[in-house]
Length: 468
Ligand SMILES: Cc1cc2nc3c(=O)[nH]c(=O)nc-3n(C[C@H](O)[C@H](O)[C@H](O)COP(=O)(O)OP(=O)(O)OC[C@H]3O[C@@H](n4cnc5c(N)ncnc54)[C@H](O)[C@@H]3O)c2cc1C
Image (cartoon, rainbow, N blue to C red; front, side, top):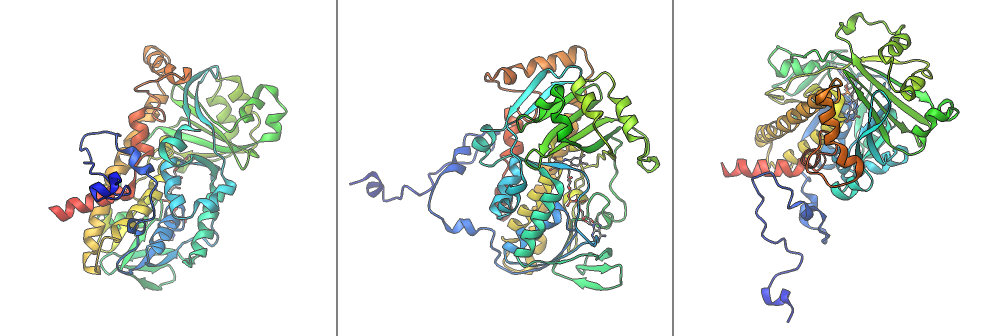
């Protein structure tokens, strides 16, 4: 008789494992158990079908629309732009995001355009010396069960758009929402037309109109970050012709030069055809006063004395946009009546963890999961309350982590910078370490950031709510 028969149990049955309430990663292996499909694989399928309006067809709005549609809801999207496009150049799509995109069937639309960097290499501003190193391949795929991509923003958006259309989602372009009726669940379009639904999800970005309504008329307070970024792409052929900089293109990696009050983030996208170049620098002037015409000369002045590799690449830039780096604040509510905000509308943050859009992707998956719990529209507020609680906590933490990164990277030369760099030496040497000021590498931060499962967090919060 087998052990299985003796115990009258199946080897597939989940063993009793109490979820620890202390911070621990010891149960991570349970995510990798291979077992036959179970009813839980359809845990996102909703018990009721709601009508849902999504305002904004950005990265957040489209992912949310897809997640909700796949759960069985009737979703209609309203977007002010007549054509979908993304300004800026590349975007990092970290493992916590790709895991969700894969589950939603979006990864196959994205993968043909995505590059998978081998590592994130942190370099000293002055000479490019390697001071930190996060191995993405194979560590992130092995550790977090999902790849880490970089991709052109326009390709990411068009992958989502295509998938949304293939799902049969109605997307109304050229439809600007000028007002909302939160309690009735209605949107009022600029042309005066009114549309209603069981739920309105506003993913209308950093300058959200819906946010102010949700907050009772007083908008979010933005803190001055004192930083701005030049965002541009560089002609790789010019870079290849220069042996001093061509090595940057040799391997698909991200390279970040960090220094006093500034940093330079680089990576290739579009199968190595495009070089993404973002330069953060101090600027506390009012963005409404910015003209874009002196950008190239200003950029050169800001980075005088930096590694000649950086200054040479700056010399190859033909044009660049200067972008304000806005630091929002953590809100205490995202919901008013049947109106909900998510994505940048709810949690604008500094881009230093490269997680803003990833948070919006998590929001979409979490919302679909929360709505899958309810049996009737009367329970809608309960689901929204759970969603709001879980997501405010997660995005608030990410907000903090992004701010901390700006402080860690921009430490001026001196004893604190030396201690920071010394603490990253083990990861550069490839020897084991328990902590690192590089938050991409620090084991505890890494697990919290990339191992996070937004659906599981909703499940836990829902169970707690049921017990209360
Ligand atoms: C320099 C920089 C680098 C970044 N790098 C990364 C990164 O590497 N990884 C990452 O995950 N994130 C990154 N981010 C953050 C990321 O870009 C944003 O978090 C993300 O794009 C937000 O998506 P969203 O859909 O919430 O908002 P948006 O992209 O702003 O989309 C909002 C949409 O709503 C529409 N809209 C607005 N108002 C209305 C209206 N009234 N009616 C109808 N439609 C409306 C808009 O036209 C738009 O299409 C970065 C940000 C910056 C500034």
